[in-house]
Length: 428
Image 1 (cartoon, rainbow, N blue to C red):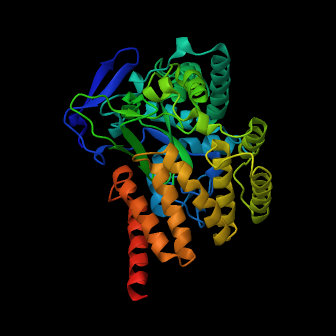
Image 2 (cartoon, one colour; image 1 turned 135 degrees about the vertical axis):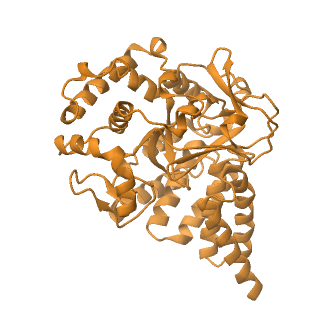
Image 3 (cartoon, one colour; image 1 turned 30 degrees about the vertical axis):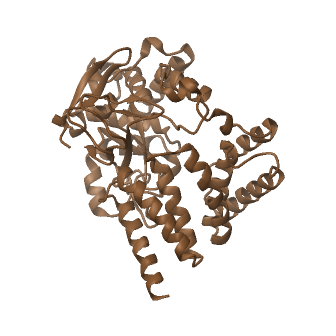
């Protein structure tokens, strides 16, 4: 859909909002945006290409800074406009490395110094972005001031004196805008790979029960409808993970975005009892364990994660139902560990236990549920459980055609797997 079919409007108590000028059905692509600026997260550095954000085991690094890595000369050439100035900065601070937000802010500064047409600003420009500075806590402001000082040191190789910059480029104000307007960029399987700024999409307001969803294809942001939307109705997305209990969602929204959500899910505290079911001391221990997992890289690290998961899942078998959100996250973690260790049967056992809770917490069209169904379907296929795999993959397909669309690379992979499963069943 062309941006002309979307309209910015004043949303009472929320600043601006975005609405559509025609009636929408679930699954319509409303907006396709490229970022104003984006970076790969530190955790994914070296695992995905800096330009296209595709996962690749054979990346080629920049010969100058030896930090940025690309899947080939084409991506490196396309990325040079955004990388050439930060390249000197990254090289100058080695062996240190800037936080993701500082690296992103640096790219924003360089972008602002070379004014150019940016397609992600069709409805809203960087200068329009809200910062909520007056509403931020003193603790938050102090943290942003520290980041602004870190940014100034990081940029020294290219910008010796920040006072000579145009008045519109204020490091502290850039961070206040980054904090409440950035999007976490995920790959097709909803794993975080980067962080980016898409100014026009900052017009979208939040709901814990949104009528739209954002997915990514590389660095491109795709906004899709997941409910029927009437002419003039406000378009909404969820800024945060809806799996968390109401009180945690409200704390997160107030701290980072400075507002309280008044959607029906929050008013009714929907499903909070199920989310924290079971013995409190048990789920608190599981919560700490899940939060302590930090992007395992080696086989040994994954084995340690799996051992910890198995121990807690076994000891809490009678204390926590699988609908407890921390137990659910532990099952996800155990499945990931088994997949990375090639233990397909065990991975399927853990994955199958997640499908009921996913259906409970992600009803309707939700990309996370679609991806989980696809993962379990792939595991069933690997175990020659073809009828079960086909049924699971069909469920994933029915959701993903709405959340991702027929042209998305993950949807293409799902359809290929589904066709393979159907072909095997025809010859059996």
